[in-house]
Image 1 (cartoon, helix red, strand yellow):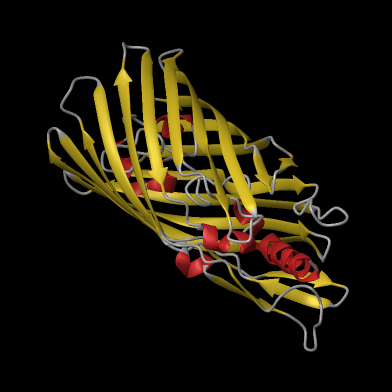
Image 2: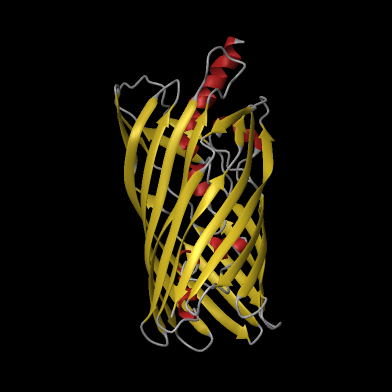
Length: 387
């Protein structure tokens, strides 16, 4: 019994160090759609994007936006992610993520853009992750990641557009457990996204986008036993998409995306002072696997003022049952997502957008009996102005 309790406590200490995906986990720790128009398509927006937030997913799409001079997309998302560890529900079940982007057409071929979005984060408060042990094994954490991206898209020919964005990240992190407390720490990171769109035929458009690893500075926490630190980088990804435009007022798009989690979430090493004997381990194996995500979405223009969207997104969890014990705080296991959305034109230049996304509940149980579960409900609101 003592050995089992000790193993549970070690698992808790290890898992708390990667609580990075607890609330905003969608495809692993990457959101499915940053605003209402993207969420309504379930993230199938690589080949035929329609708003200025394409600078985050495929900056080449900026060149194809249908505005004469400027397009502004501003909004926010509300997330309710019911989740539990060993049957104990987490508190802090409502989160807020803003997304804003703007695109300026400088010439018929060149479009510049910039955007700011909350791309990840969490606020987890589990009162007792091991209810069978004496006392309360509370897990409380908070993480926020903001991304700012200046970008450009250029229409090289009537069929080919290329684009690029510089991604600047600001990541805030604090972790608390019965074993240790790591105070709030904020670090910057950097990366790039490169993209292309290609009109293969009048009825088909293709898209390609690559996002580099989110290379963040190591988090360094000053504790009573000295400074401890670790890297918490974001995964690189490669996405391809094809959009069919052969039916009037209808776009159907299918995307495939590969997210390279294994290179940043397999093993994590920690810097510690010489002679350190505290609870923070030297290394933890989290064992995340690379993930392949499939998304399909359609949008249908119902008239001059209304557009409807429907999308489905699926990717096997990057966390397997065998490594649940070291991922008790990273319940990044939702696999299937459904999105529905609508755009309503309010004036000649102004539109309102709304979407609802649902991440279907998924649960995993480790060989030792530890169980994690996650479900998601998203509401997305967005205002669009273009002229």
